[in-house]
Amino acid sequence: MDKSIEIDQKDIKPSLKILSMHPLKFAMWLFIVSIVMMFAALTSAYIVRQAEGDWLIYELPTVFLINTFILLSSSVTMHIAYAAARKDNFKTLKVAMVLTSALAIAFLVGQYYAWGALVDIEVYFVGNPAGSFLYVISGLHAFHLITGVIFIFIMLFSAFKYKVHSKNMVKMEMCTTYWHFLDGLWVYLYIFLLLNH
Image 1 (cartoon, rainbow, N blue to C red):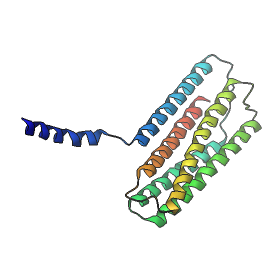
Image 2: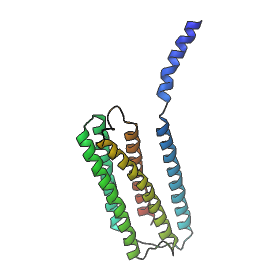
Image 3: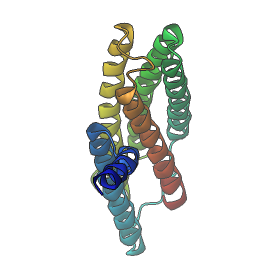
Image 4: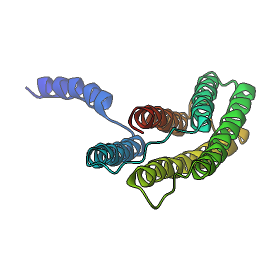
């Protein structure tokens, strides 16, 4: 009887191990879900408010499209960095992380210029809800992107100290997942704004 209980417990342990998740990854996924809910609420409010009328019609500046390509490129370099870390290819890892950092900063600078381009076509934060929503949506995304850039810098310094490698991938996986999420979120927001401006 005791032996059968022991066998049962041994059978259960591997399944529990498979279902478990690193606490940091779990916290990150909770954070991602909260961001998704916030932007879902914002885009829903955008559509509801737009239907009420008094909505400024404008063309999105081309710099938003350029920024989208910059951010998508950073996703490619981030994936290269992740793959290099898994293979302990430290040279490629460092180069790819530096490129990802540079592209991320280029996107943020590009967003600043995009807001300047909006002012040039007289789309302001105050004055019409269309402009207000655009600044809030792009600004909140930029804020979350800054948190991603900080995470990338942390991983960049870790890479140069050889703390990122095939046997220590948890934070690298988190950084990669979070960055891809932010990139995907921006693509969704850009398409949404393009179709509903």
